[in-house]
Length: 125
Image 1 (cartoon, rainbow, N blue to C red):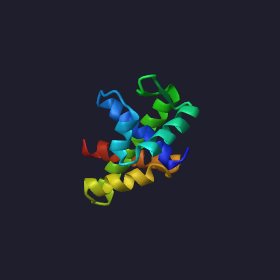
Image 2: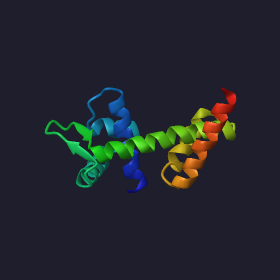
Image 3: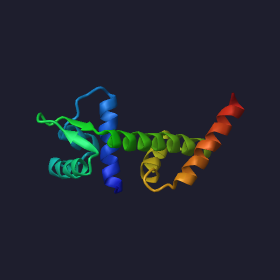
Image 4: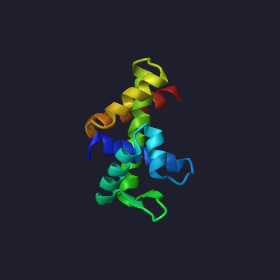
């Protein structure tokens, strides 16, 4: 899956976590994209069986879509925290960089980051 598709999934997930019914217009607004671009992306995600679209236009994540979105969200949060801890950057900067890094980081590297943060947390406790 491409970075843009992953961004759409993560955005749908985060909007759903707010307890909202999610529609294409919500995703477009959240990402700052045009409605036609989002509609095309939703079609691709639906064909890949990551989302379902109800007759009223409500978007929901499938089981595989939810897993992928949760994994991306976890990576995003962990990388943000890691960058703030190790690079001493603002949350805003860390968020922006994490948004890019989460799509390309290898599993081995991500596990190393998680292990490092676990060790720091245990040391500080």
